[in-house]
Image (cartoon, rainbow, N blue to C red; front, side, top):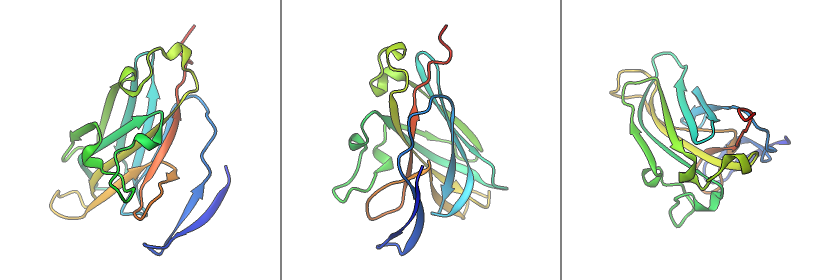
Length: 173
């Protein structure tokens, strides 16, 4: 991966931007970043023959989750966005109120993201946008931050991250 620094003009913030990674099968573990720069945990993505598993796990001391939103698909242009190109997590198809928890796993049937037969879909990339509310001081009464998981900075006038996961077939004989 090539790394370059990018200044986002509307935010005045520098992000390290990587070119989109190649498709490598197996579990993916991405940083979960709150408030643009605060590493608060990880997002782990795996699959089996029928299901995509996306796990949020907080590792920052005292941090707890709030509402989680997730989108996955084979075409990033299908991500719910407003007319300015900003993702709208409230319109993501997978949501869970994880208030006070430190870990949660979405279990998504692969058919729901357009994968009918994983045996013929090995190494097909899925784009995954994981968003969550994270309370960084743990009292659920302040310290709330928006968090996104993934190594790839999104485009548009606001910050967000996403990941590219390649379906694995390692479990097949």
